[in-house]
Length: 144
Image (cartoon, rainbow, N blue to C red; front, side, top):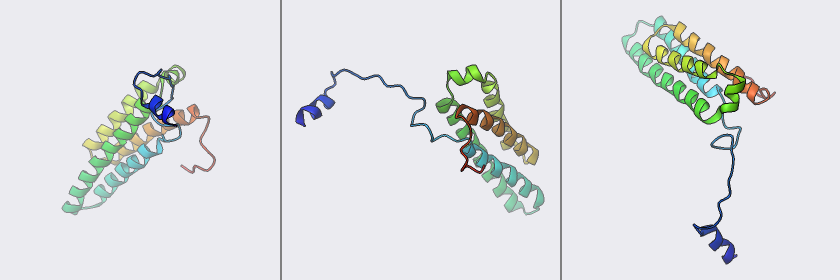
């Protein structure tokens, strides 16, 4: 037992090469995280348009901008941690699609037009379609 512990702590021991698809075991990534935040962006813009309360509208802007930043975060996690070169070979439009989706999140930050949120949702849905294809399909238990 002591020998095993000393071997594990030895900085000169042979290193074992490992290979992983993502930074954690697969199954932790899901484009739904980006979609949930984008749905908030879209709905907040609609509520903003329906209100004439200045305080409420100011809060809408602040919260919508936070949610749009979270969309960008979740998209970049998918792009940088999940998708790999073999996915780009199979789906060469991925780079452009992620660029367009993150730009759409930025556009949604800059406006209170609900259409910007709808456009963002469309881009996320395109990414989600490819994501689930790379995983062999969406699990039956998943509803959205």
